[in-house]
Length: 335
Image (tube, rainbow, N blue to C red; front, side, top):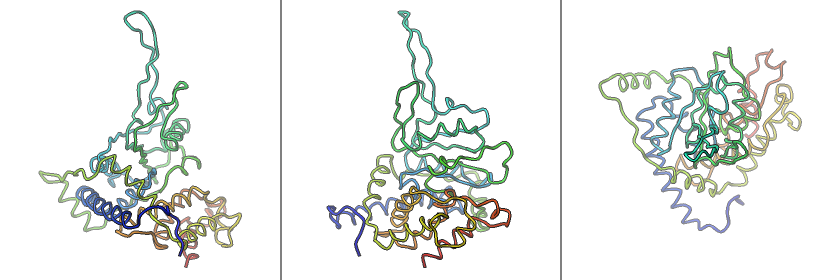
């Protein structure tokens, strides 16, 4: 079986580095788990996104710990977190920053750039769909290029830089749906559900007493950057590569052989979906303590990668078809 990887790397060195990273990530998950209860899958997928160098969209009703998750990750990963509450009157300058005209003691005037909250390592965009399209689009260049342009000047963002955005799936009055171009910038869309009874019981006991558990730092920003570089060196087997290509290409109504996709989808995912799967499967393998991804990783990550990169037709929505049903058919086609 041929592999997609760098051919010059020493396998024994790579194995040692992956095992060391796996041990460090185990400490990260343990530290986050002290504070966030009943959301193991959400934590796993968020860490997969960060290890892949991407951004994540968290979708869930209020009160499920989305904000706390971002604050906790900032502490555990040693990153500089910021939070912006998106509202209809929020302007691009409120996020990116702005130039102000200052007068020196000698009377000379000059513009000085005052950085906005986006100049951080972990930005929480809370209820991102409540801001206007103009403000939403202000994030596009930052999310893709890790820099912003103000007054003709390019300002690089700190490294690493990740956006963790939240959306409320129920209350949609006064919101602006994210355009497809911006949704595609998110590596994964993660659904945040209710914890089970045992987890909610543990949360009640842990968070309403005299003392509340605090997260402990387990990584640094520099170590996260090194981990992201290592993830890209993980070998991917030809069978996994073929599965990724088949899954993504089968989700396009113009080229698919699946009747379910042709009937129900108006448009499907682009090449960025395949890139996201390629990186995310590697990260998931490392989190599980494995040295290479499998087709099971592709199947497990298909829904969070594809869900926000495809759309149902009007007729499918009228018939009550759900995207999850279409994605299940795509996963079943992998065997």
